[in-house]
Amino acid sequence: MKIHELETPALIVDLDRMEGNLQRMADYCHEHGLNLRPHTKTHKIPQLAQKQMDLGARGITVAKVGEAEVMSEEGLDDLLLAYPLFGDAKALRLGAVLERARITVSLDSEESLSWVARAADGKSIDVLVEIDVGMRRCGLKPGPAAVQLARLIDSTAGLRFEGLMFYPGHIYPDWEDSSRKLDQLNSDLQRQVEFFEKQKVPVHRVSGGSTPSAFYSHHIPALTEIRPGTYIFNDRHSLEWKTCSEDHCAASVVTTVVSRAVTGQAIIDGGSKTFSSDPLRVGKKGGFGLVKGFPEVQFVKMNEEHGYLKVPDEAKLEVGQTVQVIPNHICATVNMHDVIFGCRGEEVVESWIVKARGKIR
Image 1 (tube, rainbow, N blue to C red):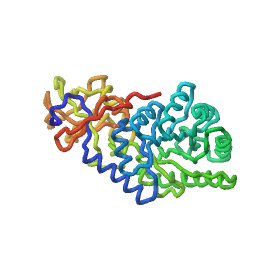
Image 2 (cartoon, one colour):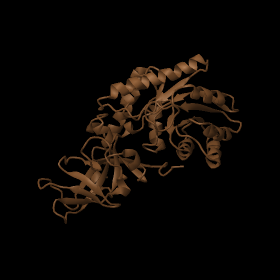
Image 3 (cartoon, one colour):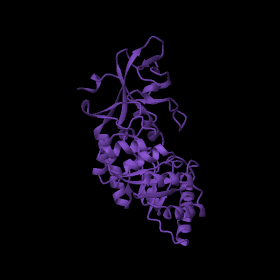
Image 4 (cartoon, rainbow, N blue to C red):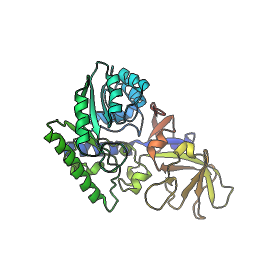
């Protein structure tokens, strides 16, 4: 089957580009002695997680227990749950995952710790204490509180303090002050590690990293593993952040022009239920995706099932024509689709069920 023969809208992946992305990250981590633990929230597909493992990943990262269930059921057996655990139902479910996989969890509170202890129920769970190094989302402020929480972890049956986790989601390559932010991150992280050293609490692992900051990781001496996710496909945000070039954008949505009734406008058969509603959060270009091969066309608006393209006179878009759109945010886009199609050139050569789609609990 050819790409233009797919029923649209359809999410496709250029396999050559994806495999290049995977290899680049694997090579980088090998070169710099970093463990790679990719975040599967981007692709949500066990077969792709296994590809990452086959290229040397130490394990995988998941956001929610539901993702851990899907990945462990497919044989992925070294998981980091990079999200605080709360609630009896989630604790019971995580306990069931422990029957078939090694689990590390991250947390930043005694309340979450109590639920992790319930999940362990006689089994063993490694725990990372999350610290905040500037993102201001989750994580304790660097200082003695993290050491106190680590001691409490080690005193809890079934749990072992393994190390620290952080998320540098505020650092991007194209920001003029990225060097200053990176220096501050290093200072905060080193201060935290020194607190642990003074208290003679061993830190075996320091987990960090995002796709935008991934190739900065060798500038963070304390770091031992990174958790990028988006890098497998990349997206328009990656492109605008200068994390990659368009040649590294492996995923796009094939859509069909269904109307040219309004002058200067084309309607495609993909809207917010195809791409998500994520706006472009960097630069001044705006819009909801990059229309490949048509730099003059702007994706300016969406309804649930309609995408509005602003089309200048010189752009040749006709009703029935297919166009490919690189979405702003590939993680949210993947979660909109049941199936992803893998392509080489114009040929559709394989497909994957998005098994962890909708696993938000």
